[in-house]
Image (cartoon, rainbow, N blue to C red):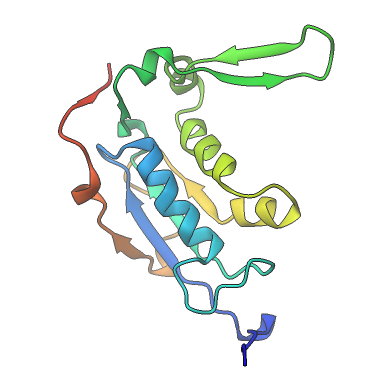
Length: 152
């Protein structure tokens, strides 16, 4: 018999990840699993079991290969001929946290639950953040990185 967890029984933890020299896609998969709650045994796809994730040092994140200059992000304004494109290089100059947020957002399933889960992602430039009072657990992702990273 399957045991379903009630909303009152859910407990959200806080995790802290240092994005220094982390690859965007690999970091996004780790974050997506945590904010969806797939790392817990009580995971149910229709409920929000996820934990909060604080990512710091986002300005030091890496892209593999030549993706930093060649990758394109598209969005459409809704008007005819209203397609806009940008690269991670241009995006980093305006908002360095947006590249990781887009990667995580596109790994989540669409819908209201995904929008709620995306609010559990907190991204900051620099090594300080206002969530230290929640005592986040540190996740070391340095062992997942490649040796041949290119950026700049």
